[in-house]
Image 1: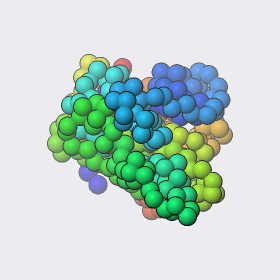
Image 2 (image 1 turned 90 degrees about the horizontal axis):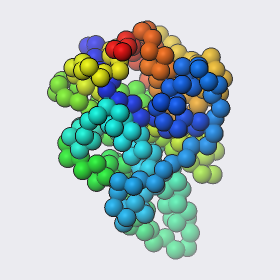
Image 3 (image 1 turned 180 degrees about the horizontal axis):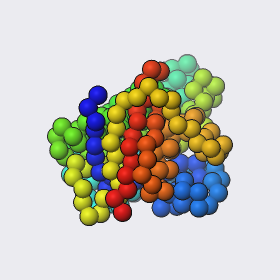
Length: 266
């Protein structure tokens, strides 16, 4: 595979015990102990009231990390191409649809239906951000973060344009949770650009490898990494937080993983 290189301009982060990128970076760098706490999803204030009332967890999560990343990059979200990656979309909405279809009254609300599609978060993002550039949505089960990263990097390299990557996963209620046991919501967003700027945070170069995926020594962080697909990004985020050059291997396919070389720009 061709080496794919891009520059990180901004990062957004929200997950259990990780409330944003600055505070999360302190924890990931090891400067403070990581204490997992339930993820609190903010109200998506950028949406009009009617759309705001209809949003589910996956939309709130995507908008939160997306706006944080673009704000930290100093880029207008309306101008960025985007890639959304999620292993399953809105689990709570899926649960409600299953409950309705299993009941005597099987009339499904239009709101439930339009929130059931996998690109719902991308649609709400276009409304909230006023974004009109192209948006791709990928799903690869537990490999969804790596699939999204490769898609975003490919667009950066081929089209020579900045791309916003958003990888988000949320939990399922029971009984679906017993079969898909994602414990909490986790989202990460990266603004990736083809050229280095004065404000660039780091350079990423991705290739495929058959080396095993990196684990995290901290058992609590490793539990999040291994149980939430979007949190497969945590080993890479730790390296970015530490501003250390190095190589990290991220879960992808059974026979191939994604190796990412990280070098800090400042």
